[in-house]
Length: 521
Image (cartoon, rainbow, N blue to C red; front, side):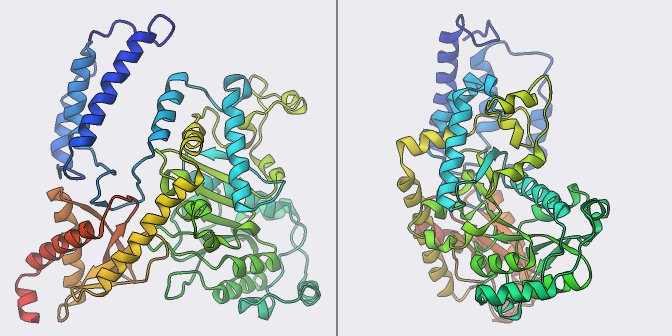
């Protein structure tokens, strides 16, 4: 198949059809035939093969290019659809979403302005409205699709910073009852707030000294919160890590103490970031209690539900109770909605807050467009040029329905409970917490072996398993010690797969420990 014309248009539509069909055929054949999630190839070996390609000498032939791609990419790709891929928050993808990916890539709409997208703009807006309704954010809610949770968290904290700078009264301390996680009756709460009120520096003064701003986040929360604080020019101590309980959930009593300390030190509680589905443990912070403390302190409440957003369509929706009180929410459809990367959004309770990212460029989205009611998504986005990623979710919902997506997420949550039961009954392993969502953190830990040796053995087991290609698991650190992690997002994974992977891990760790294990026994 000779590649004669470089651009898709009316003259090359048939070439496009045949070329994409050939590419899809290669991928489908590979997906159908892979017997392991990874080949285990080492980075240096694959780097040599890629480096040997002369990009100044095109192949000119589609078949030759696809043959080369098989060798450089498809052969050694990490296949998330395989039932023994158990490592990160990567999901097998819904086929309707892949159809959407093909359509949006070919049409190539840019979602920054109406005159570049038309119907794409309205479809994205409808999906934001639907998600806001599922969250319960109210009629003034709005939002925009993003590249992922990191960008969503950044935008949410930018809005929180600007809102903090605009306030004219210091946040008020949480009353003693609220610190214990119990809401005061409204009159008593208002009286406590009034007694503690004192003036805040003028908005420009607070913004001129960003070191005064504080963000409170779970010690088990996502690193993107710290990253966002740095990007926003906040001080080194801006992010306060709030301790967690034994289930790895933010402790409301600890948050209350930190908010009170903030007030007493004359600092500004810019935001509290609660997590609905931590990356390691899937833990969900106690949202109602945290929302109460935020209301008492005058702090912006952001909920990072990048992982847990699948609960919105699950039979476990009640686990997100309290999220409706958030000022902003992050959702990653490319995690628990089984969408291809990227598909994410940030939503806000009050669309007026999005004004903080609005800039009217004369050539693109002049102010007169907003005055005329023209829907330009760039008015509420950090990005300008932006893909029509919403189409993937749209086709998924139109073909499968929300209930179909929710059943998939419920299935992997059920599977995680079964994995926990296997681990809890296996004397070779220690499991950290009972899973709330679909991650399970554990450690190979036979008795009589030093903690340091076990650290090394668990790291070795994960690396050896990856190198073999037989399965993939993740590693993490819990209380200073190295652990292993299953992230279960494939409904086709079985308890048999999990038991087999546990045996493989134990075998690699046991072989590594060798004499140490013999002496211990």
